[in-house]
Image (cartoon, rainbow, N blue to C red):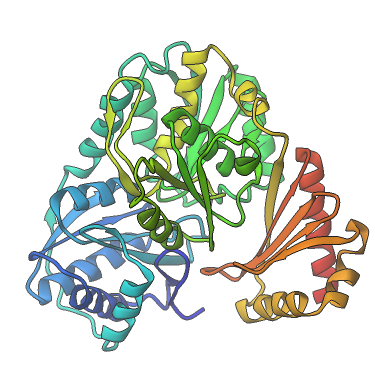
Amino acid sequence: MAPKFGTSGLRGLVTELTDGLCAGYTRAFLAAVPHRGRLMIGRDLRPSSARIAAAVAAAAREVGLSALDCGEVPTPALALAAMTAGAPSVMVTGSHIPADRNGLKFYTAAGEITKADEAAILAAYAGDAPASRAPAMPEPGALPLYRARYVTAFGARALNGLRVGVWQHSSVARDLLAGLLADLGAAVVPLGRSEVFVPVDTEAVDGATRARLSGWVAEHRLDALVSTDGDGDRPLVADAAGKVIPGDVTGMLTALALGAATVVTPVSSNTMIEASGRFARILRTKIGSPHVIAAMEAAAAAPAARTVGFEANGGFLLGFAAEGPHGPLAPLMTRDAMLPILMPLAECTRQGRSLADLVAALPARRTAADRMENIATDASQALVRLLAGDPRERAALFAPLGAEAGLDLTDGLRITFASGDIVHLRPSGNAPELRCYAEAGTEDAAAALVRDTLRALRARLA
């Protein structure tokens, strides 16, 4: 696939993310956004990331900027450091997609680029041309700053009594996460470290991975097992029975604990948010953090908005000055995995309840998600357009689900049936995948909806 902008930055095959292309987009970015002579650069643990980061640094040096190398850091840690320093930044990561792909996430000094910034970068792009290699200056402060944010807010006793496993795999956040949990009082059990890159999609956890997590929880008598995706901006949380808690549910638990009044979330997130009656205002957007951020910024103008955002993948955005269990927690308007891991665990300690108990207290709406891989984006888009435009095609595909009660075309095709069940189809914005989301009254029913829908789609496309 040719490199292109999706829901979160520029993505493409490693073979196509040449030094010249990466340098060209870096020049375009620096021409399109304000800077004060500095660019901060971070990267994940993919084999290609160091080479791409060097190409980005060389382009920054070529146009007269200081290139500051923050090293292997989670995306939100780089964003926090850069915003604190008032500098733009580039994170080299493909997030959850396989290691044969990678990407660039761009941040202005104020935070993630907007769709308007993206258009300006594309307009300024003048083609591929590698820059002469020049070393970046080491900048080791990003990790300590990010860690201190949570130690200050949660304190040394927030997780006392909890035994927490950390699935380390190849997450760039693996050592930080384990250390931070220990800082906050948990007994930490590191698990599954890998020196080979493992693509972990927190929104579509496959059956084999779920079985592995459940086995670890039982073997090590864990209260919870946590992890992140490759660049540390999406959480993975499993309870004491090894059940993975969907990201929009950890997001809701975090929002409740923070006392949020306004929730901004994509159309794919669980409708338990509305059913709870716990928030003054709920805004639904297209999928992708730029859309969530734009709506959060608009909502924050209202008095006492206390705005947060989160996605079905679990990435959490804090839009107001909040209070943690121990101290202040400043806004961080970028997708973050650490807060929606720590806050539900801290609530377990504070309330003396398990994660499963916290989830059981929420309205009985449960979701599932999976994807059809290796389907060309054009093909998945054409299929979704056909189904969206032809009621007869939908009726044929979804006949077992009964009558439709509503249709939402905000982002892909989202159908609510008279039974209350929901099926949502959406072509991925950054990978050759067709994603399927479902919602029902139980986890098993939601999982069956996803499984049956993907089976029907595969049969149709065969």
